Every structure is written in structure tokens, then in C-alpha cells.
Image (cartoon, rainbow, N blue to C red; front, side, top):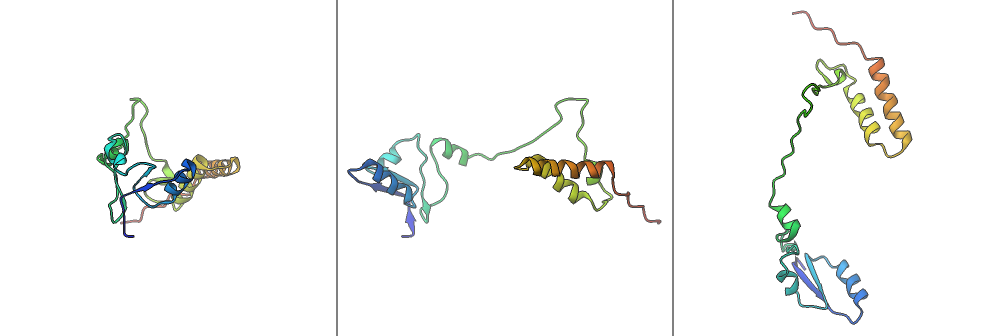
Length: 138
């Protein structure tokens, strides 16, 4: 079926009905009740899948769908200013990618080994930076 707005599952066994409802590709499922109950409860998100539509309205999920997130950051301590590490500035040294990769590994590594490998990579590039490219004569 190309449409999947809502479904109703009827069973004498509540657990079985719940398991069946979880497997259905539908936006909403009512268990041992009419499908209209999912629509009439305004605190529940309403919406379908497939050709019945994408996204939701009503409920917290519906409200989120009407928002346009805007993220910004700023220096909140006046004497501390953000600046790019020299390895990421221009003129490029050719080590910016390595520095960023080590920084990401250090910050987001899953294991302690990954974090330490990232830290050592960052430190090696900071302690022994590559030579700065010379400016071409004009």
C-alpha cells in the first residue's frame, strides 16, 4: 500500500497487539481502539508515512516541526577571544586536515586509546609545527 496514515490493531492479547503495531509502517496506530482516538488527542503527534505525508503536527513533535532552529555562539567572557589555531589559518601549511582530524579524535573518540592518540597528534603538531610557507615574491 502506498498510504500509511494510521492503523488499528485489535487483539485479545495486549502484548501481541503492541508487537504488531510496532511492525506496521504507519504514522499512528491505535491498539484495541478506533483510529480516531489518535487524532482526537491533541497532545499526540499526528501524521503519516509513505504517500500519506511526512512530518507531524500537534504535540511536542508537531511544534518542533514548525520551528526554524537558529544556533549562534559568541564570546561570553569579554577578555577571552576565540581564534583559529595557526595550523588552520591561511596561508595553509598542509597540516590543517591532520590537526582537525586529531582534534576530533581527541574530543569524540570512543575509547581512551582513540582520545590519547588524538591528543598526541595535536600535541605533536603544536610542539613541532610545519614550516610556514614563504610568500611568493611579487
